[in-house]
Image (cartoon, rainbow, N blue to C red; front, side):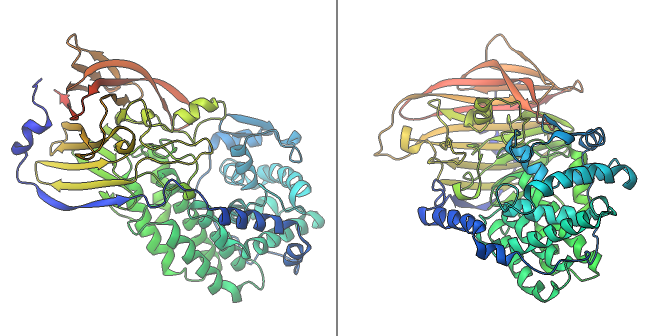
Length: 582
């Protein structure tokens, strides 16, 4: 293997046509909700207990829904079979349906969201006939109605969960409204109506993101499916317009910068479109236009196996699941290569795909559980993932220790460079991200022979006096990925302290690694037998254990390539290359 590294070969790649660079700034990124906003939010919740809010929820008891929309998506077969067997199962937690303790819940927050959103109805309907599913659905519904129908409290009546529940109850109405018990049936329909009224007053108070979109979708769907709701349709659609305006960037990425959330928003809008279809009303152009932006951005962060890469706490959703969801949208498009605002850059050639995080992390007010992943990348060759992030901080099974979940959010859990054993952006105990990366400078160039992207961030400038700059070059045949990681003095006058650095390349599940004797290279064998060579210059290479959270949320033991070195006051440079052998 050649010792030549990226900087040596730039002139051989052909004339590169530059794309104008851009600074991406994380405005107010380390600040959560202001005191005034937190007080307003708390006051809004307190109003739920007042007689005035109770009066708002009163209204005519609906006798039926005006339509029953289709659910365009399949549920999880394993969870569905568990429901048929009398068990509710979610991310490693299992509870017997007959003994669900809804008054004093003993399950996790994730399990509670699965229960209160009624997402379990999709899983049940995917494996059961109506005759099989009705007894199970009614058993869960009756328990939920006893505990929560008349008491407005969190999390059961949290706005986003209420919105999701309206969509789920309407799509699976045959499972929950087939009873001959008229009292039970009336209770379900009245609770549906109360939920719609509950959302109507607070849709604009939800923080931007999937929660705001879910709430707005519930408002629109509730108004369209209940008698007497049509006069408010334009006002409800205006709330949806406002929700999407603050939750989705112009390039189609969601503000949380999470691909898993991106998938969620796509599913919400597609399900809402089915409500219009059921009512035989033309959906507003906004839904199709937004899906037309969301889908290419989503495909842009998919690797060669068609599944999602792991960013901002999300796991590697399998390719078949992504394909099914995209097919349901009806959007046919190519992956987005440059999502400037969302922040992901895609390089692809032949079978090789690179997804690069070239933006500041999400702002604190729009995400909890965010990750300090700036300038990390994932890389695949065909269906095999070679370099990954550990992932899964918000998608792991319940049995993952809390310390591990927090560790998955750190810079060290991503395939990038770490200075002074510190995160590039602070990971806060409350789940938000604090100070660190405030701005990223980005430039991209293309030619027939290669694609090149270069980005730098200031996350270590304040503490250590260095800017991290990373350059990735994928050759046109997809057989080489070349990289340069540089630590440059942030300013001529600033105080720069020599310190250590660690450059990590977490390897995909099943990748076998054999280091060479000189400590500068390693041979990687992919599950299919394909060989890739890794070589570096500017640091000492070792192989260490790592882990990767798979599509089921379970940690898998893997390896990582670790390049270590010391950074003098003048900065340093590590060049590396991944080259396909044979």
